[in-house]
Amino acid sequence: MRSGGVSVAPFSSLNLATHVGDNPAAVLENQQIFSFHTGINSLKYCKQVHSDTVINADTVPNSCWNYENQDAPINIGDALVSTQSGIALGVYTADCVPIFILDISTPAIGMAHAGWRGTYARIAVKTLSVMTATFGTLTENCHIHLGPSIQKCCYEVSSDLLVQFEEEFGQDVHDGKYLSLQNANVSQLVDVGVPSESISVSPYCTACNTDNYYSYRAEEGETGRMVSFIQLI
Image (cartoon, rainbow, N blue to C red; front, top):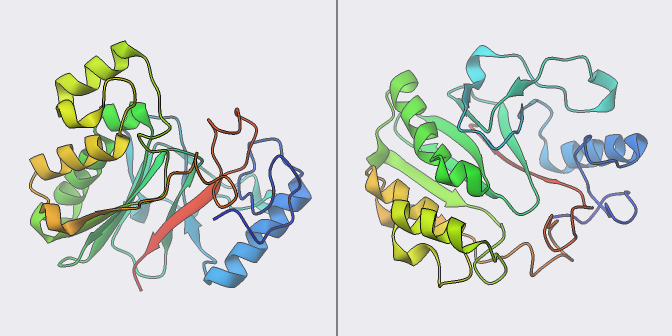
């Protein structure tokens, strides 16, 4: 959600990202508001580049969270995994799909950022693969949620891209004009053994609901970013 912060248009109001051109003082205050209301004081995230790179967050220090700590290290990638309790993994979104992964057996968690490039590169599946190789995660033990993101109703893309996605993920990923990142991600997750009943998808389209969510496409590139996070208690 984008409400409850102090940023002014076009970033109004709870923009949490330092890289979009917002007033640094406003971003810092928003981050403090976010931390107060969520209880999240220790956050690990990455510099997102629409890649398929997955970071083992247990081996890296906390990323910088605000302008008071800009010199802290930050890792380049688009997904993180962890088995540590009390450490939140976060991704920034404004249309891309935030993918929450919970391995209830190990336990372990993953958090992925999937735009069309990440979805096509199977970032969610690669996150699961890293969890399997690193923590022993089994796909059948995972619960996965796809958070609010741009949906097929609003996501018109080129015909070439539609063809590429259909070849990889089947006809259900588009209707001849509009692409469903949600269906593409669900398809690949089911293919690697995640039970379909263990996957849930938010019904909310960010581009349809700019009062509640940031949308890079609907707001023509000038907007803030939300943080989606997951944490083991």
